[in-house]
Image 1: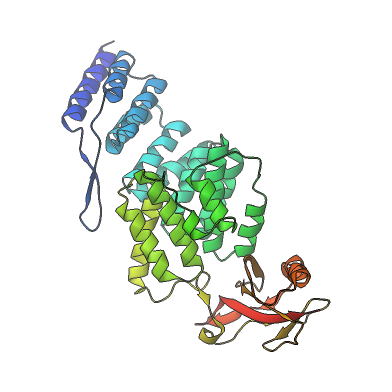
Image 2: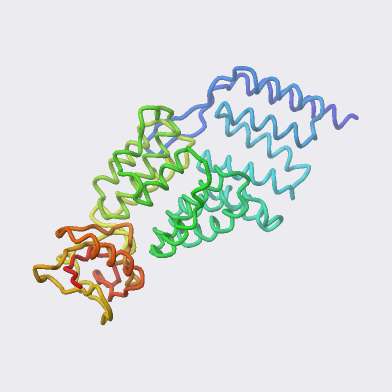
Length: 379
């Protein structure tokens, strides 16, 4: 009993410190901006009193951590979860929760340690894989991020989480230069899922179901929602090579003040990367070039069947189309546009055959790059 009394006294001291430091600084950005906790309106104090009664009860530990998270007291939540892990160092749930909160305060190394340990202990826990994917994405490790989100996706506990992991998987694959995989994965997303959140709207943008100007609605006033939507929009522009529009969207994410959002964190990372490159260009697998910007332009592999690509000058019956060819020599169907001509049957025939066609990818700066390809097609 004496040990429990000691622990209870220790917890009471934590209560007092937390109350005194209710708006503690949680994160200080490289630019010097300080982001603080909110004032507790009651849930944290109630959860603390309950935990004192049973200091080693995991559910009460999690309840206090959840209340602290609700007040954006992430550092306090880390301390609470660390007390639980002192008794149960191999608890994958506690590791998942603490790893997530290390992410919130931008301690990516500590987050990675917890989350990787959690996946080794229990490989079926969604939270460890999902948040490990976020850590890797923020580090620019897009291929390994895609692996984590691919593992998380089938473990999602509800449609909203499934939608979130689908979104981050699409972005990770796209940023890793695997556009065809990203398209195929997105095509498998079930239309039956009735999800209406920021991630679902971002997926609609990726699928060309909405235009960029339709992403935000008048109801989007919450700081985390704005940060999330703005990052998705910025990444969408970045994948198309429009670094100016991408930068503006990332800056909008930061201006939202929604600092706990993963979109806010990713926007911070993107702005650092753009600054390091002087904003002039992005990675070979990301930026979209025109034919005039590359050393070797896209060319179709010897084609068989119809419709035929007939180059820069077509007959009167031809239709001009435009699409992006990725670094593997495959067309990106979501980028398909009709530039001239009104032959709807011909356009439909091109769309139907686009994914099976192969191209020699463009090259610039010593690597294969994505390029806008414009051509006439004819029957």
